[in-house]
Length: 278
Image 1 (spheres, rainbow, N blue to C red):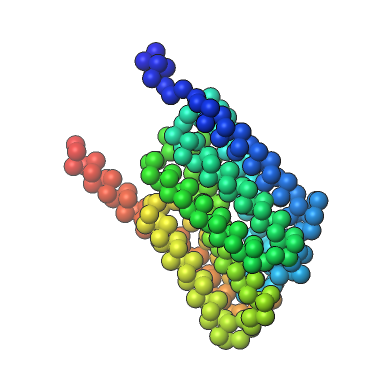
Image 2: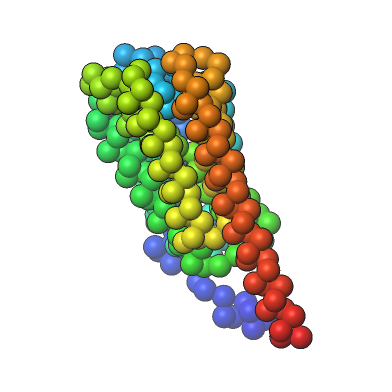
């Protein structure tokens, strides 16, 4: 114990600065959320002329899908608290993810603020930046190996996996909404085929994430959640599209299947390695 204490990393000024920045970013994110839900601004679905409403485009998830944000925001709040804990101050995961986590929260709030102004193409730029930031963050977590505790698996890996999975789907919806607002027609068969192709791209992105970072169920669950609610929206609400609804449902299952296959593969490899070493 004494040896571990002597060799434990000492908190630096950079660590303290990172903690403060993450906390300030969380506060900014909360303010942005209050704007987005209509407490101190206009609700997202009513901003930008309704371009981001659940029935605005073929790739808009039905309303209940957005309840996932409650889980993501709770996770971000928990992460902000966790990174202040004495044991987490110098933790490699806090050091490797802190600045990116802060950037993701600022971008999140920034997206809500630009949509309030109706700046849809700016919102596309912001959400693409958010996807990149989250992708790099999750890659760093993968590079660090499995989380050493249940708390980190839930608060760190779970939160940012969920965050990335949902935003990956939301990005496609955001880009589609922006194109439609600019006059691109999606109600034709060609529009439906393009929407189906975009959904296929989400599956490809999921496969890439799994290939690079391993099976992350939080990511898969969030992506499948978003795709499933697109399916429900197109099959039960306007704009109706059986093609897009069915493709979205199949895509949701495919994302889960890709993740399950990777998990089984990794389990077999680990099992084989364990048998060999014994």
